[in-house]
Amino acid sequence: MTGHSLRRLRRAALLALGLQALLIMLAALLLWVTGTAMHRHAVAVLLGGAISLLPNLWFALRVLVIPAPLHAPQRISSLYKAEAIKLLLVVALFMLVFAGMRSVPAATVLAAFVLTHPLYLLLQGWLLTRMEAGQSGAGRDLAHAQTEPASNPDN
Image (cartoon, rainbow, N blue to C red):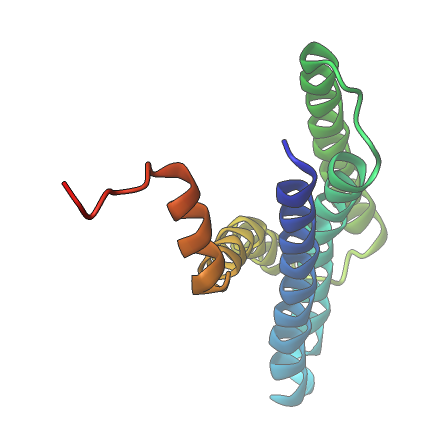
């Protein structure tokens, strides 16, 4: 992976995490302002969203920010280890929430997790697509012209 593509992927991942956090807070705020009966659900949305967000943040920082080993087998091994730790973080965070916050509705925590977990992947894919589309047309034309043989107008 080139330095430019790694920077683009890193930027998309961190932006997606920021957007995910913003959407989680917005959903919780909307529940909070609807009335005191929904305050427990607002807290549950924050907790379920955090259970999704924090392991994704750790994974993004581990894989995309900290330099990885140069050899492919070491990179793959590093990715598997990071993913395993991410899954353990999810389990540990669920255990902490369910053991420590019994007044929070478990179904809402699970629903928030299930809805926000794929949101990160969708946002990251959308951002990467937008970043690629946002490259200057002149830069794409120049790159395209360099890969094609020059046409001879005399022929």
